[in-house]
Length: 136
Image 1 (cartoon, one colour):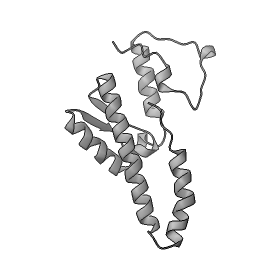
Image 2: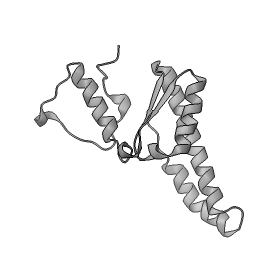
Image 3: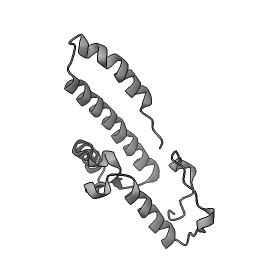
């Protein structure tokens, strides 16, 4: 599932400054609310993806994977579904290298090979637009 938070971030950047200046809330309150809202959205999307794909494990990687609050929220959702969360430690959460390496290992174990000359990188690759050969 593909998500973008650019709209909500643009809104917060514009309207948040006004609310802080007017004394309606503090920077800390705004940041906390933004984090809780976005993480709740991520947890809901993950829960839907798990149900759609029949999965019982969530792997949290990438820079946001370091966030203990996200790990906590994902764990609550997973436990309610009888699932589990695997959160990497900070050494592997700086970028998506661990996730890419795991996908490469699974592809290789299932006979998928790509000649170096035929490989490429794209930053905005949609994960739902690729064939996963190691899933039944």
